[in-house]
Length: 370
Image (tube, rainbow, N blue to C red):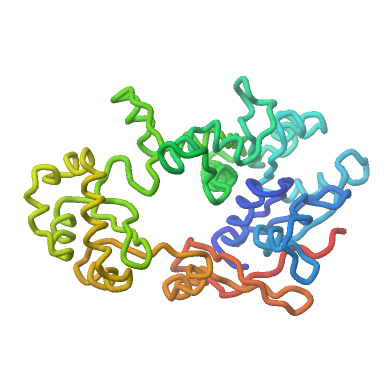
């Protein structure tokens, strides 16, 4: 693919999700990505179902547009091939536990000495420093340790994992930001550098205002279901047939909401006079909104709210998302033609650049290793 990174070559030692997500984004932006996979079956994700045409759709969705080579970094000949790849590489990405590459002779000290312009991005559970550096981690481990699960779900309910692997995905996205920053820095200094990404760090970074709220009030934030902790009304509310999302994020929008629901008196109610008051009385306001919405079906309310300029939307399942005309119009569902002729649909690239095309198809993931 063409793109702003078409002059960048990435050697990708990562596997499963966090690292491959980062290198997928780089590939979507035009980088040449060469996956280096071990000889005993390659990336573990190749074995994750479901399968189409004998190919893992999990692996396909993260590795489209890349090439792959099988190398055993403990084998002398394969090490020479790997080093030849590094001779031409701008970026090396890996997501092993800290120390793994050092034991193979490819730690940052060795890499920077031999390839001083190389940007080395290491994504791990807990980073290359700190007391947890040698611990293994998966997405759910850092969701739990990073506080995210304590904020997810309903009050009094069991712990709930966020429905996508945000522990891995946020680490991948922060890795991309770090890599691009290091490449920009290299233009000024001529030197590469190490990008050290901890999945736990990334979970802490996306806690939004929960840390600041705890610091200010000493109260421990907990799960609130679909409700926002600081903005009201801002959540899911039941219409006659199904719930909808309403996000009236300021006083002007709240007044529009009141008018649309035929409850102008709410705007002057002391309990709902401003956002702070509404948040303190969120349960009462939610019950009143739900009582009004229950008189009509969701589509009726969504049309009225949209016409009034009140931010709102349906709660879509994945089939709904894939059929959504805005998602389709923005090329966020793209096709991959598999070797057996099957077309697989996967998520597209959300970064739209005016100087580069955003094609409706993507090359398939590497088929065989060699």
